[in-house]
Image (cartoon, rainbow, N blue to C red; front, side, top):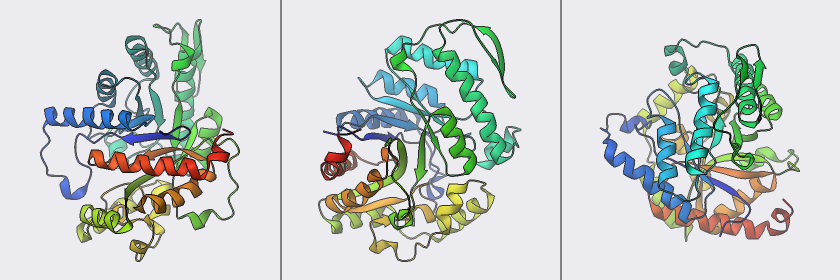
Amino acid sequence: MIKYLKIYATTPESEPQNISLKKTSVDGVKYHEKVINTARWSEVHGFEGTLIYSNNSLADGWAIAQVVLQHTNHLTPLVAVNPVYIRPYALAKRIATLAFLYNRRVDINWIAGGFQGDLVSLGDETPHDERYEKLFDYASLVDGLLKTRRLHSHEGKYYKVKNILMRPEIPKEMIPVQLISGTSEAGLATAEKLGAIKVKYAKPIAEYKDVKPDRNFNLGVRFGIIARETSEEAWEVANARYPDDMKGKMAHAMATKASDSNWHKDLSKLDASDDDQNVYWLKPFHTYKTFCPYLVGSHDEVAEELSKYVALGHTSIILDIMQEEDDFFHCRQVFETVELILSDTLKKI
């Protein structure tokens, strides 16, 4: 049983973002079943919630969140929210309505960017740092609408409302937990001002030798995990799922050039030539199959490596999309082992 860590799975995408699967046709009914299965497996194995992606090519995240709520008892949808897609009042109303209908919380993963082409096609060419300034204005308004029990007004640079009373009223315990992914100064500053959990795409643990632990243990980290009873079994699965792919490497290189994302550029600079010998693995990222690093190995190997990140304060962990229920089972073994390794530290949270 996972007691201290907050683990979020990731809901499968309605359309493959993996370059090698782009032409695969998608059946909506079968996708609906995949969403339900992922949600149920996440709940059975003790996860906190499940991340739901958002970009121009995917099904609406709020419709998917409602499917998750309908088919689980306590799993929390973590919906990626970009201000370009929905007005702040409409977002607050949606969150409050879901809380009212299901008596459940929905968490928010704030994003200021995403795919650059998506933003341009929607007429948003706001510079990187200004997008975070705009996001803070947006998120502050949403937060105010959900928390205020009287007429609410907001006078920001980008968003303004006057004398709005939010109905249905949302209970305090259902106010969303807020997360922000990013490593830029603008992103970290926005997370700090909002009191949001800062989620990072982790570098190899050696890169953190001079980093002081977060005393509040309120950081997040993004990983894929492939763990099995033995290291050999784990690497057999990993290499079968993510073989070498020259086309994928070229797509990754093109995406890196087009992106203004700091974390994407930082990870892309790391050498992945010999990472098959390490628990920390970047091949799926460098071949454009995933958007995060992986930890691969036996339960104990992955738990030992992951515990080093947790010890720095990363207690919210967002996993990459998992392909079968077996993946959830093995990940749970890892998290339970991490909690045993750090039991004295985590009990103080």
